[in-house]
Image 1 (cartoon, helix red, strand yellow):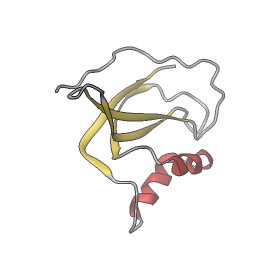
Image 2 (cartoon, rainbow, N blue to C red):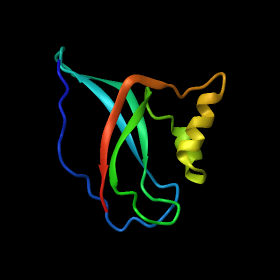
Image 3 (cartoon, rainbow, N blue to C red):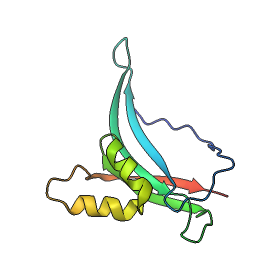
Image 4 (cartoon, rainbow, N blue to C red):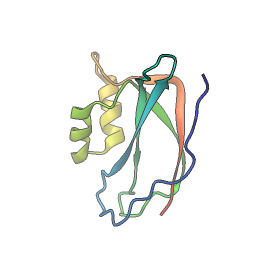
Length: 112
């Protein structure tokens, strides 16, 4: 089995400024070994869209992945705070549900 990537752009229009707006990147593995394919959660990460002063943070980023599926309740909590600070605080907790998927990362391009 080898990775397959869909090259291209996902376009979003008329997104209003929100300093905590992020793109959630959810990575899954699909196995076609059996008659019915199976889908497995691999990892996830976030990409903040705006800078604190309201500009799109255009650039190419290499972002670490976190293990497993996105944690829905954390995503809701991140709406009101800086998402990376929130995740780094969660990783410091003893019984954390947020851990790095090592040695993996994704490369994402964000353009305005």
